[in-house]
Image (cartoon, rainbow, N blue to C red):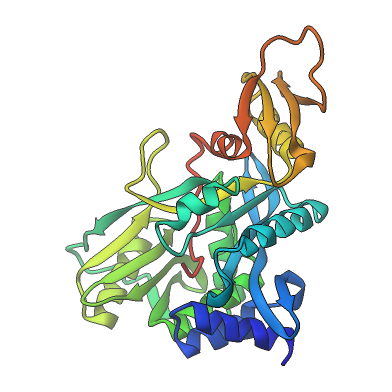
Length: 341
């Protein structure tokens, strides 16, 4: 068996996914160069994929890596194998210039596990009932379902996603994976147009008696209402629930994902440049990436670093890598969607 075949077999053993989803994932998402695994003889004991995602953060687009498919063979759990594998993945990410790692815990108890590896819960969402419009949609707008890649549809989605200041983005290749997931997971993508110009996209999934809207992006209310009307007509279901980002400063109703700093100095420099009026004097400890340990001074848009505490520099606030990861996203309302979680 190839490494890919072994990892796929381990995935099927560890996760309760349909064969159609697993086939789609290993056809469209899996690549050997993003896979990290621990083997013993011919057996894969544990594996994960560090999937690259660009992210808008503090006015810049930065490289991140999303941990997908992290699993350990049931016969080898409780031995620290996954902890070792994650540490290896962090080292590889740092060599590759990745600033942050992100993930969505598969089970609620895993939030605590990943917190022990330096992740902080920063991605949240609220669920809101979507009220349908009372009136007939605009006749100037046409709505249709899309099942294959269309450049103009991706360009619209990409433009709207980039309007979010702190958001995991989706490349064209990733959009292909999203479409693949929709095909095998009872999902849909509706597109509204004025003439040939795309002005709205709705992505969602049919649940038991209701519709979950994961993305609803439109240039105006006419396009949004036209999309909602088409979804109801197509599914016959009038109960729609959408994920939405809470306003800055409010707590989300649900936790979704976590983030971890991989390159502390580079991340703090971005943060300092974005918030030149903020001042931090911190001593960072990172038990997985010793290169991040040290003393950092954020002042007037710059980040200064020293491996040793400099005399006469005052009091440094002690901060673990997990605490720093949470601090760097606090009040930014970071957003992630379409992650096949």
